[in-house]
Image 1 (cartoon, rainbow, N blue to C red):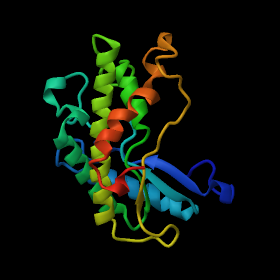
Image 2: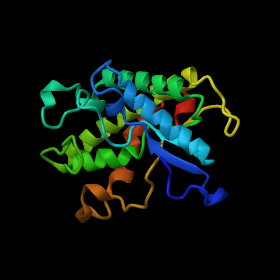
Image 3: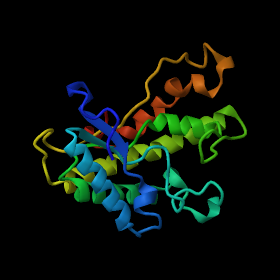
Image 4: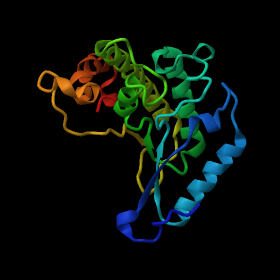
Length: 219
């Protein structure tokens, strides 16, 4: 694996990619060692080319045993289920322990708001759209709250189990990657639908639940 921009200078000194949960753990508690070896090879290549890795652990997708859009009754109901939050934290901790000597910069979630809003509009699986705009927003909010608690648990697991400090970046760090863009509140633009209210509506319950997390988890 050689990124196309490798060797272009200090302004291109990092590469962000995802370690895909469903590839590493295609079945619950079943680890695929071939995939682990693949990601070690990717990280070895990045180091050889002078690139600092930034590793995402959840980039919109979920293992089918966690959330199967074609067979919902057979899965664990995604981020609605606190048990899934624990499973994700365990995955994050295992990855931190496995790759801690190669990675210091972790992104447990990529753009959680994007996945929740897209699901509430039936653009991304699972289909969280309700019978009304209000119901769709409630579903999306509950999905995001589940991701918040999963992030908090993953943060703790990474800090606990990534015991190796790389010389380049020091202590392991974990942050959420957000999609931030201006939006007009729904009261001023009712014709714009769910997309116009994603940043105006969801932060209220998110902040409420976030108060229950230790301070270091809240960005």
